[in-house]
Image 1 (cartoon, rainbow, N blue to C red):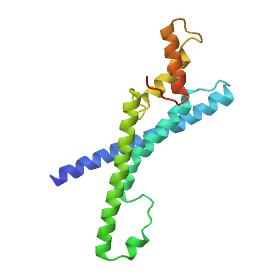
Image 2 (tube, one colour):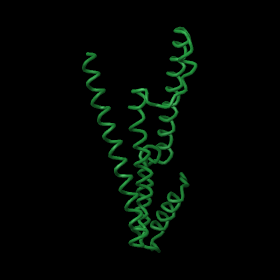
Image 3 (tube, rainbow, N blue to C red):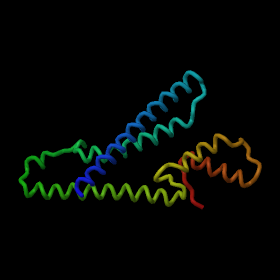
Image 4 (tube, helix red, strand yellow):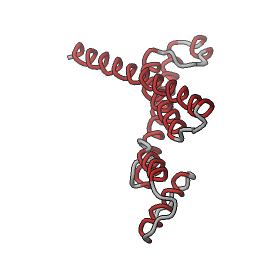
Length: 165
């Protein structure tokens, strides 16, 4: 059973690291395209900034568990190295509890952002993407009142204000 769990852990770690590397490649090419489109083509691509931001966030969140598991995170371990076995055990529990609190806070923040926005801004940024592309592909002056209301909601989302009716 232990071998099965370790095999699953190795595969999921490899998958997460592949995803983190892929996000780094996406961020790099999006940044390159942003430079080319802005300074060579003189028509800046608005979507590249959002793509870079989201891919860097996903890269970090996919890579952190592997770094944490391998002990590669930056640590201040002077107290840990100079302490005896009993104090080390207490410090290990404190580190575990602090990590658990941080992970639960991140989970709560993501869930509450998802719940407030009704579209997943806290988890995946879906509403921001939809708002960005909708604003670029609509006419400048919508004709119907419904279209005007959608347009104003899109503009509010682009400016970073999420207003729940």
